[in-house]
Amino acid sequence: MLRLQTPLPAWYREAAPEELDARIESAKAALGRRLVILGHHYQRDEVIKFADARGDSLRLARFAAEQDEAAYVVFCGVHFMAESADVLTAPHQQVILPDLNAGCSMADMADAEDVETAWEELAEVIDTEALVPITYINSSAAVKAFVGRHDGVVCTSSNARAVLTWALGEPGGAAGRGEKVLFVPDQHLGRNTALAMGYRPDEIALYDPRRPLGGLDERTVKEARVLVWKGHCSVHQRFTPAHVAAFREAHPEGIVVVHPECAHEVVAVADLVGSTDFIIKTVAEAPAGAVLGVGTEIHLVHRLATEHPEKTVVSLDPLVCPCSTMFRIDPPHLAWVLDGLVAGEVRNRITVDDETARWARVALERMLTIS
Ligand code: 13P
Ligand code: SF4
Image (tube, rainbow, N blue to C red; front, side, top):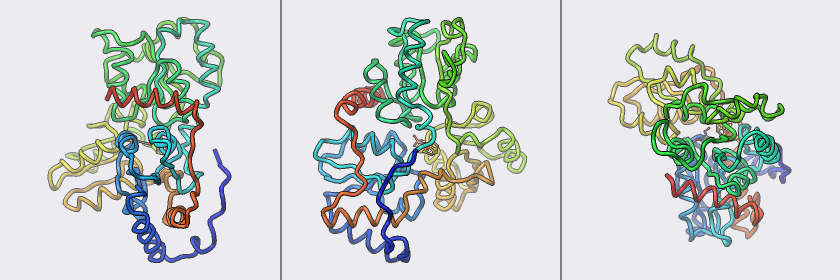
């Protein structure tokens, strides 16, 4: 989804990297504790080096919720992360996204109105009192608000299992809050998590929002425990079992670690699966000489390779592209928004309206309590 924004002035487009770095440093010094810069692990090195805190989406959401001093939270990440930060910070704090077009194609796959329509269609077949909506944090504030209003919860890739257990219980274990889950928008995280918990493939159904009743028949809807929305991450969906096979052939002793946004056939042949924080920890804890094939965004893979020269860290896909929206955050945009703050002008502020924020906060805070 493209958003209208002020074009970047020529100076920022043409400045040399050292000039931009100097501007950013001097703005940081001038703003002091009034400013905090958050950076997601997928950010490029030229940007992440300025972050006061870096993390996966769970860590950054927590960090934002704990900030009460900084007047300005500059989020080097994507739109849904900045929205969550706005929902979780106090009213006197302003959240800024250096480039408003840093979105997330997966989040765009779940429109709040489509989720609402799906819910209404499902209500004609099943009792939605027993249906728990879960939205991956990679979704708009409007989708989070829908989930909050319907007693549901947000999850991230780090806590999806804990959240699904809260909602559904483990198979054969204690009951959860409901009997079924509608998991939006990442089919892969939903499916991978449910399968890891022990749910059978036939208990998981793919809900296609472009088709009536998700393209499912009534019996399938009634019997499914987990309805996964037909959404995906184009970066992670590129990884295939053939990539894993090629890596294993080249490195028979190698370790394969992938993000749970990868398709299940990739996760099934990986050694380890987890969020970006988990991947970082796995590489850090691997012994010197280890070879790791990683299935996630390329900036993080390259950074891990640089930070651990005593290990071999490679992308499972040699031709992988970066997350093009994360990549929009660059030093020119960062310098431009920071210069604005120094001059008393807030550029590219992300705000969530009060009613949406109220319910999105319910769903986000429920997640923070569960995990
Ligand atoms: P993490 O929760 O692992 O940071 O993932 C966020 C994301 O957008 C992955 O594509
Ligand atoms: Fe969205 Fe995928 Fe980019 Fe993550 S890597 S921000 S899920 S498009």
